[in-house]
Length: 414
Ligand code: ATP
Ligand code: MG
Image (tube, rainbow, N blue to C red; front, top):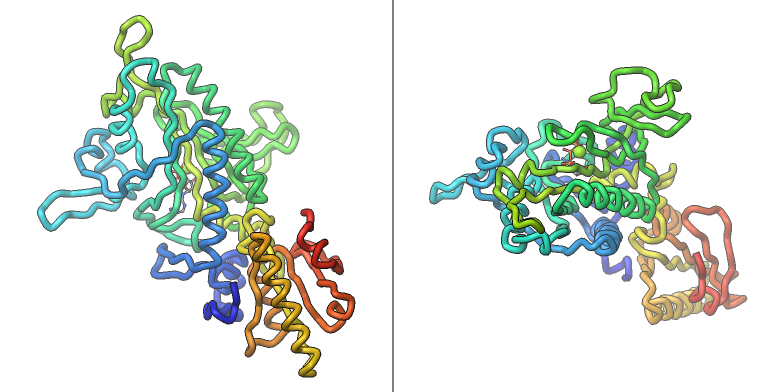
């Protein structure tokens, strides 16, 4: 990609800079654009990162048997009435058709996935079943804030599992926990698994909480044994596991997993015939990851005073080529030629590369943009590197410079 063709320019300082650096960087780098309070557009660089996070999520979901589907966002009122959530789910967006019918805009999909599963689940032989989707969710949040942290329209991965018995549900629940940790690790995060209210159907659910001042949650964490619980249900000051002192921290919830058991299979009548020919309710689990909130959290946690510092797997691009001109025509021609060669070479090797070939932008601004946008490797081509037929290589997260030949560049290891 040639930056000269992109036309989407980065911004200088913006108002909210002090409030949240992660959000300021996302806005300045034009990864996202605010449409209205709690509603955002994704622009090319931001969308690339979102797609990469989604790819990681998909890979880890497939690894634990998840089958991807895409459910409707427009839900008939009747389904939400059956679960008593048409009135009880405060944040449900309700829309009326001009022909009179009411619909809910999906904030979560138990009401849709449970009837859907009825098409496939009849006997114990049809279980377990794991279905997931990555989809736009709608919630009429009272206080949208923090950029993508809490929005009225957001991207979520939701997985639903269906089981014959609690043992199988428990086993899969633990499997999902491990898969989630892999997802976050690949995104450069190390969340704390926190016990939280499980609602009426289970003692606890588990949240994946990333420590950050910009998070809306307060969690309690025991430095001694690692026990953690969400503030909502944490009264005592001592760790209930080891008795040591417990401290509170601000954190952002990037995922939440629940054992729904038979809550929705009862209200939506999802049964199966067991080995003895008896009819039983299917047990369910649900597992969410806030994809767009993740982008916000990653930007907050993985950034420095200059901009975003993303791990290679989710960086918007892996390489950016910066020609450093001298003002001398002959030399500059050679610099352009060599830069074009490197650009072509990287493309030929299926590398994700940006060529900063913009003419009216100063070299200082170009350097700033590389740091702001979190591109993983900066490649500088200058008179000095040219004379040795080398490329100056710098990783976004390291101050060290390396001078590599074309061949070494292509075979660069992490
Ligand atoms: P919260 O407690 O933060 O409101 P939640 O517990 O209601 O979230 P879940 O229903 O568990 O959210 O949804 C799964 C994930 O989706 C959450 O862990 C979070 O990362 C993300 N998420 C939930 N609500 C929003 C929102 N309004 N904007 C962006 N992401 C959200
Ligand atoms: Mg939650």
